[in-house]
Image 1 (cartoon, rainbow, N blue to C red):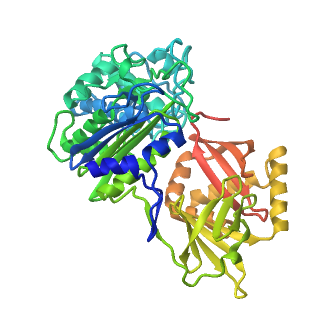
Image 2 (image 1 turned 90 degrees about the vertical axis):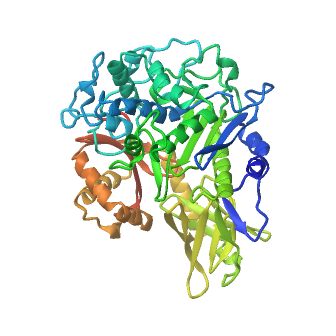
Length: 578
């Protein structure tokens, strides 16, 4: 244990370990200083028991040290704790996971509309984010400002600072993260139990598990406030007025410690193995972490492969960043930070702990330097084009090579053999392609399973691309082909008859990999009702809001100029358009 704590303090691992070379580690203090994070609290689980818990840094500049008892906002980790409380009602027969939520809502009803008339919204869908409910997250309220009631938040009435929470796409179509859905579930829980939500969770989850420092309190009570960390933004400035208030209790309102959240994770681990039923039975615990049709559990994200399956959730509130990960068989970690860049610090902490404990996931990538079968490094210097408006530049500075994507900082790349390079800062591989005359044709980059091809271009072409992108951004207008390409692509996805010859290599690879999923998705969404151009991205892509029969999406579309698609992307909107 002492060695693991020391590694976190003194030897945080990078994203990539270069085999045979000294690992470029960093100290926790240095990383916290670089990222403007004032304090961090960590709890590590080993074999189902708390292995160690430590606080680092200070609760506020010039203030007391962070200790295991220091309170942080749990942010969205409030959701799985809330879900566990709601599932106690399911196992007692008070709630049905698959019944219409309006069966249980009494003081407020989820308004009926074209989508709810087609499919009912259930508690299961609220907990696994497939209910089609609006509002992803919440901005919080400045301390001292008027706070809305639960009813006002649900209906978007003043002083609520978010729109009404409504179903704005057909339930059951796809995952769309929704904090608003958890507010509906909170109202349902209060209606069924006839008790304030905070008291119900305290009595059903927090007290039985021993989470004695935790509470759904917004604002934090005067008794607990002296133990709380102060919120800081990404620049290291204290959030004006102190930690913002989140009256949206179920999705965002828990104050807690890393140790308490570790207790929560260990309780779920023990319930899964049948060693505890203080809160959930073994069957209900398994239901909680079983991936649904679209991959989420009930209130918790799940991942990994047997026998190393895990459950996890992270959180973002103004001035706080949080993370929880636990393997079903017994290991895990909780990281709580009071700084807007806390997720970057968390990543370094998690991969260091994962490496020390030998976890099958989350460890740094290991790469090997090799100069075998390599061309002269100077032969790959030059300009490359990824798509119509995105470029990369490779330069040699002394003995080092650097790659720089348009709009980003340059990073060093190292040889891995057979004309392959890798980046030691972020885990990206580059495979170069050469012609018979030894000139480079281009390269393929691979990161997190996603590949891109960049072809070599000359300086004249590079200048033309840069100037063309500048004109698009100065006077944004949709490419004449964009909307028709979007409509054609949707119809091809729906019918599973995609013309891959009209797609760039990355788009074709992505489409092949997800063809069955896309076909089901767009058949459920129905026909396109309206397409509205909304602007141009920094990368030169056209942006559209698209309204379907059963939901709304935001699309990016980049024509290749020859009747095909260079790049495309889409995500669900949290509010209907059109």
